[in-house]
Each structure stands twice: as structure tokens, then as C-alpha cells.
Length: 450
Length: 125
Image 1 (cartoon, each protein chain N blue to C red):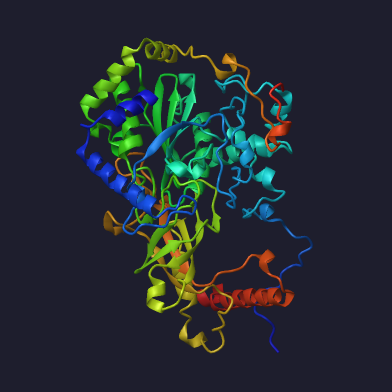
Image 2 (cartoon, rainbow over the protein chains, first blue to last red):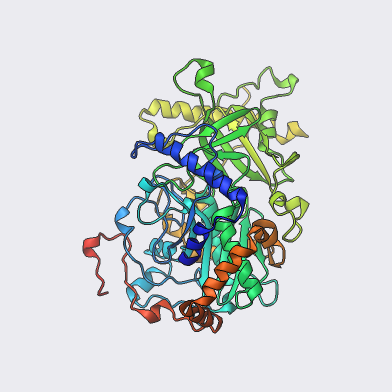
């Protein structure tokens, strides 16, 4: 792989477009260095879109357990609390998530130690078990800046995940064409973690190399698509393999590899110290995410909800205050057949005239600011759906099962229960919650709606 | 005075943990192990994905990766380099014949006990 990388770096003829991109990237790097004192997180540079930076490298992580940022809890993924583990080499990875039988599955041997084995079988020591089975073999990571490099890596730095098996029979395509293979189940489990750790992703890209067979696989909120088998024994497919590796590592930007095209990362996606902030447009306003998400879904198929604290862009200048106003941003895929959450909020805040006399107490209900379905910048009249990025490949998606990307901004922010220091305040908050629930129930009880 | 219009709910005799009602807590809790149980995850994923994965797709590589945009000259140079080295050729032959040795056959894996400080870490295990 290094050989390929060296050749790629030496190649000056390929793709003038990429040269232009590289020039731009270098300039952006210079700008970032200028604004970075080496210790504090870099400040966002105006007009810089870090999604279009292409600076990646392949890492062999099969002996290390990738982590997530300290303070960000994702079930199935260790946090970065204990750095001492980073340099520790772990044993041979067991390739499948709890394979049904030991004989037909893994092409890599399970750990020999009985102590270790028991820790991998789902008993009370199971956290280690879960983590060790959930690590890819190789990953294509967005490079952190030179002064930001440490041992180990974070899930959110991954652009592409690669899984290696010795036997071609372990490949993702089933022999009968329909049955879910063990490898696909394993990849899907890692894809859900990848989508939870790397925010605003529409899909997760994976490569598999099983013997001489390689495949490209993507997972999104509606399922997955597995490519046909390519055999690197043949000259033609070896060429395709070389082209794919080149494209993934050097040509395709973060948007091409699954990042939502309607958001702009304001920091390097590979930064170790700085959890990237994103510029997100909702309605006519732009918001900047602040720090880690408040909550993120860890499931693969479904809404894939992310909840953030966001700041209104340009707000301090307009309002004359020191800091921008903070809001809550909810980013989720909604089932297209269901009522959009933004519409529900609009209904709540637009009560029927005849009921306004005694049902206007919405004190305990989150205040809706803006929201709706997200429109595709490449096709402005179409909302972003899973089918938007599956044009030209994959099986047809049922119209009723084609999730739509939806966002809303709320003005009210709750507080964690453990943050309350005064009992009376806690009770007042509980009363507000209760009053809000009653108000909504009264306004939109089934008797009133129908 | 008229009572509340909401129906009465049965009294809560025990507090359900977030994990028991299907929610994901935002911090590590005792349910941590169960929520990270890989067998549960596998079962759920199998059930959910059974009808949601398309196999043997002939177009995804062309549409998503666009390999044709890499110059033929570069591909030829890399291929010649790969096939021009005996070590690489031997490796590709082993991959093709599925005779690549497993890691566990190459050396005794170093064993780690997760969460223990390095001072308690022993390679002899």
C-alpha cells in the first residue's frame, strides 16, 4: 500500500483538477497554521470548506481499538478517556460479530487465552468483547495536522473502512443472492458506529478484500448496497482496484464519501483535538454546531438523529451582544409517509381560533424556530432522500420507505437532571414539562383532530 | 370543578431504566454491557437488513467512485510496479491461492487485558 502511495505522490500528470484541489488545500493548510498556535484548536477560516480537503492515509488498525471523543458516548465504542490503552497491542481480531459457529466462519483464529475468550463471549466483561470485535482491519483516515497526531485514531476520522478475509468464500455476496452474509452483518455493525461517530453522513463506505475478491459496500439509513465481485487475479479487475484505491485516497472529497452536501465542516475532519464544527443551513439562516452533539442515534436503519447546540451565524454583529444566541438543532431522517416534526410544531403553535381562549399555555413546549425537509443543492426542487445518493445503482427503493432528511431548530434548551442544584427549580421544571404535555394533549387530542 | 381531561395513568411502581425502555443514555451506565452486546446487535441487524441489502450491484463502483477518471498511464505504472517485484508477485499468488498465513500462525499474539494499567500488563499471558 505504501508503494502505491509513493507513486501517487510522485505522479504529476494525473488530473489537473486534483492539482488545483491540492493547491487550494495547501493554501488552506497555511491559513490554518497561521491561526493555530499549536495547542489551542484552530479557528475556522472564512470561506474554507474542509470537506473538500483531500489529505488521507491508510492505517492498519486491526490491532488497535478505535475510539470516540472524550465525552461522547456511543454504545459499542470506547471513549478516549484512557489514553494508556492506545499504545497497547491487542490480540488477533475475531472477524465476525459473534459468529454462529467457529468452523465455517472466521478465517482469522480466535484468541487462544481462555481468560480472554471468556471476556469475548458476552458476559460481564463484555465491553472489551464488544470493542475488540468492532474494529476494521484498515481504514482510510483524514489526516490530522502534523502537530495533532497521536497514536491510535478516532472513529470520526475514518473516511473509508476496509475489511480483509483470507478466503474468498467469506465475501459479502451470498451464494444464493439473497441471504445476509456474516461479513455484511459485521460491516453493518461497524457502519452504524461510523455513522454515529462521524456526523452528518448520508452513507458509510466500506471496502472488502476476501482472498482475491474485492467489493465496495455502502450502508445508509435504508440499508446497504454491495458491488459485484472483482477479482484482482484478472488484469482488468486489478486495474479497477488500483483506480478505486487512487480515487478514494486522493480524488474523492468528503462529500463524495458520504458527507451531507448541505453542511460545511469548519475544521479539519481529521483533527484529533478539535471536534469539527459544522455550518448548517435551516430555512434562511445558518447555524454553527457547538462542540459534541448532545445526542446521536447509534442505529443503522432508521432516523439517525443527531441533536446539537448551535449558534446563529453572524448573530453577535447583528444583535450587538457578545455572544451568539444558542439554539437546538435536530437533524434526522424521517419516514416519508409520516408527518414532519416541523409541521407538528407548526400545528402546536397555530392553535385553532376557537380554542385560543383557554389553551394557549405552551410554556413547557420547546419553542419552534425553523425547520423542514432539506432540499438537495444539486437538484433544488427535490428534497434529500436516501434515493438521492443511490441514483444509478442499487435496487429500487420503495417510495414509502425512502427516508427524507429533516431538520428543525428549537429555541428552548433543556438541562440535564444532574445539573439542577436547587430542588425548587427542579420542581418548577417538572411543572413546566407537565403543563406543556397537558396543553398539547388538549389541543391535539384525537377528539379535536377528527 | 372539572378535572383534567387526560386519562388517569396507573401508578408507577418501579422506575424503568432508560435502557429498558429502548432509549440510549448519554453516558455510560450499568446497562452499558447489554447495549454493546455484539450478539444482540447481530441479531437485530440481521432482522432489519434481511430485505434491505442489494447484492452483486454492477454499477455502484462506476457511479460512486468513477474509476475511469484515473489516467491509464498512472494505472499502468502502478500495475507494472506491483507485478515487477517478486515479493509482491508472491504475495498476490498466495492471496489467489488462499495460502496467506494467518497472523496467529506467524507469531503468538500479544494478549491485552483492556482497562488495566500498563504496569499490570504481561506479555507472558
